[in-house]
Image (spheres, rainbow, N blue to C red):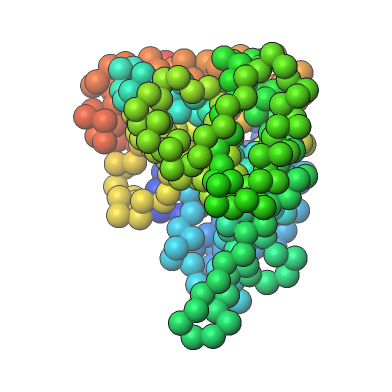
Length: 348
C-alpha cells in the first residue's frame, strides 16, 4: 500500500514519527507492506521552495492509496501570493476530500461517557479560501467594512448527508442535522431541504434537527445521546472541537478527510509550536487518524486485513491509555511522544 506522508509543522514531525512506528508494527502483525513516501510541506517547504505546498505534491497525492498529513501552522503562513498556501484547504478542495469525519468517543475513563461522530462538509461554507471560483470570499470593499461570502450547494449537502446516514445506519441509527435556518433562511434552508430529501432514502435512521447554538448547549448537557452529528463546514469545525474535549481531550480525537476515491488521515488538533521538538506532544490523535485511514482503505478495497489492522490500532490505544503510567503528560502520565508511540506499537 502506497502512503504519502507529509509531517507538517510544529509537533507534526514528532507525532508523525510515532504514527509511522505504529504502522511498522501493523506490517509485522498483519503482513501488510506499506511503501512510505515522505515529502516536506509547510514552513520547512516555504523556506526551501518559496511555497508551503511544493509543485507536484497534490499530483503525487492522487497516485497513492492514502495520505498521512501532519498538523500545519497556517496562522503563521504569509499571504498566498507569497507562498502561504493553506495545505488543509488545498487537499480538501483540490482532491475533493469533502467528508471530514471526526469521532468523539471517551476512552479509558477519560472525559464524559459518549460515542458520537461529527460529519463535516469541508469543501465550501464560511471559508474564504474555498468558496469562490477565483480569489477570496473575504474582502474589504471600503476601509472599515469587511465582508465574507458563504457558499452552500445542494450537491455538497447531498453527498455529505448521504455519508452521514450511511454511517449512522451502522451505528445507533440517528442523524442530528445542525443548522441556523432561523437566520440563514436561504443557505441553511437549502442545506436542511437537501438533508430531508436524503433522509427519505433511509427510513430506518431517525433524523432530528437542532439550531447550532442550542446544539452547543445540549452537547454539553447530554453528549451521550447523540450518534452522527451532521453540519456544514463552520458549525461542524467548532462543534467537533467541543465534542472532542468533552470526550477527554482534543489530543485524543482522530480524523480523516475522505472523498469517493482517496482519504487523508489528519489529527484534529493544531501544530502546537510551543512544545515542538520537546517530546511532549500526545500523538494519539494522528495514530487514531491513521487507524481510520486503514479502515477506510480496507472497506474501499475489500481488504479485511486493513480493516482488522485499523481496529487493532484503536484497541491498542485504549489498552495503553487505560494505564495512567503509560499516558502522556497532558493526561497525567509520564511518557513522551516517542515512548507513547512505542507503547502503542508494543500493545499492538
